[in-house]
Image (cartoon, rainbow, N blue to C red; front, side, top):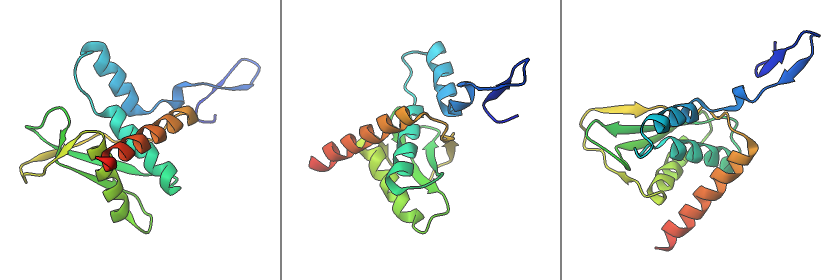
Length: 145
């Protein structure tokens, strides 16, 4: 059986939407259902990931966000892009700038950190377009200041 498909009594295969949801978005929805006012960076991680994939023509990429245990809100210790293209350092710098443009403070104090869950890339084309536009607009505004 194909991923994201269901087999019905006549043996036909019908696509479902369940597989198209990123696990990070599922975690976001769960968090919001319990703590609707609590800040979460899930959408930002997904948007930066999708923007990098579109901007650089990648098939897959992981944006790894480190946080110190004492950091809250839009404070992070660092960003690393994990992939196998020819220029991962350039991609890490682009992701770093994108998070700064989204209002994050990036400071590594060398204290203990933990890695935030990364986006698995299971998003609709509409979500990809929204993410790309959001990050491009944020970068334009950030660079103009």
